[in-house]
Length: 428
Ligand SMILES: *Cc1c(COP(=O)(O)O)cnc(C)c1O
Image (cartoon, rainbow, N blue to C red; front, top):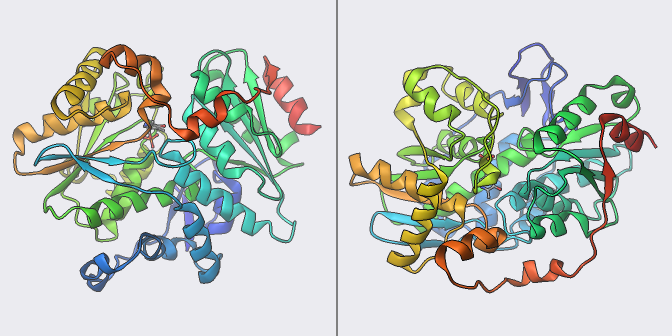
């Protein structure tokens, strides 16, 4: 597959190159040149396919010919070593649980897939890469875990000191080996600015291959398509609508790619916290990025969702076509807390704040579309947001093994304050 830059000022490139570069030289996001729908026989037969077989069929056109089929199958099997169960809350609403991976956030799948692709591209030690990633919480842990021990890949994680949860901090500072955590005296926006400066800094890019492991990278973004196929296979319903708690809009954009491949999805709901740029866009046709607002669903505190340009590309920048397929609603922290309480009281189900925002979006959509079956995504395990979950449902939560496992490990980080310190670290 060839990829082009959405800024249209850089040459087309291969999957391999798109993964190693992250962003095109003109700073545009890469997008596949073509999307060929899967044959009808694939959907007729889907119940007889394993999850790995489904994933292979879904993604192969996007990585060919850079990764041979047998290697791709191995990468997929290793990536998908845990479950993706659906829990039905009532006849109209189900939850798709995406938190059964090693760091208990949905980002595990993309991080594990991307790490293995880079490992394969570096198999002859010719493509040493430094992955630089800024995190507000979950990305750091998933990337650290996914890339641990991958030969020829060094990972540098920038995180804001004191602004990630204890569990999240442990997940990204305790692994060692090829993973380094830089603890930034500043906010998440400062971390992201530092990373952006580094990608633009020729002193660095001349000397080293820097790439990103955020969802702008096609190898982290595209595997997220798998979830939607797995949900479809488990559900017997027609008229499936996905409500997706959205931040950078990578996950929902991957769902739209699955739909382009022919997966019967009736509609998408982008469920937002108070960072409502897309909700406002669908109302006013004006895309107006804003500084991010801090909320209890902090992985969605994004004021300028980077993948939205990919969504617009899918719909040929046709506002009406997009609006037919996408609704978006925004909710406050009080709404979110009330939803967590309601889900617990009505269904005895513990949702994390992000999933609760997804549930709220599903409920609003169902008011005017009562025959739909809405699936909301549970993007993180509730104990990753222990404080707010226990405060709302007033019950102690048992920590899962993945989380207990990191709690008493020793944090190792390097404290930095400025871009100059990051640059000096990268150059040494
Ligand atoms: C990253 C993240 C999101 C947002 O996903 P996007 O692809 O950025 O829209 C939602 N929930 C959780 C828990 C996350 O970690």
